[in-house]
Length: 231
Image 1 (tube, one colour):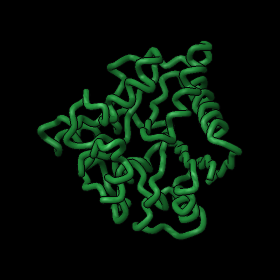
Image 2 (cartoon, rainbow, N blue to C red; image 1 turned 60 degrees about the vertical axis):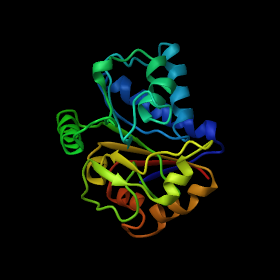
Image 3 (tube, rainbow, N blue to C red; image 1 turned 45 degrees about the vertical axis):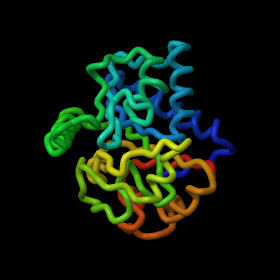
Image 4 (cartoon, one colour; image 1 turned 90 degrees about the vertical axis):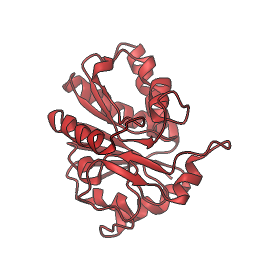
């Protein structure tokens, strides 16, 4: 585990961007695991800036998103599909066929999750971006999640639903998510944490043993983990 402490959110975003940019330069057909939420927004803005300066080429990059609410329409502004296209995909040149996201509209959850696992197996993730919840969740692997879990449907905690529901727009009570075992297969993981509410989760990651009550602690066993914090 390599921990990078930053002075502010902008530096956090820039440091993460620099790492990803170097990885894409080394491997243009990189497979990138992507996260949503407030924390990665700065990273996406920095990546877009580098793209516009012709310093990054996403034309061969493949992507897999961590999770999606269920059930939810793609056009719903609360969906991660909407989030990703609004904040990132629509602002860079990336093949739509290379974009992989869990389908919140699927009528067969089991089939959707199995197919996602198969796709990831064929295209192993080189760099996985992660955020962390105040309760230690990674992806939507809530406290109590099995460290051997794969992509599946999960019930969100009341705390997560409350924090994710903003401006009176309540999010679904369930979500599709990569499992912890799936996340751990990534060759490199970059965990981003910004703000004092995330301090306890990071403290558990750094100072305590692996604990299912704090899913983020599963990352302790990853051989190539970079933690970038501003807390």
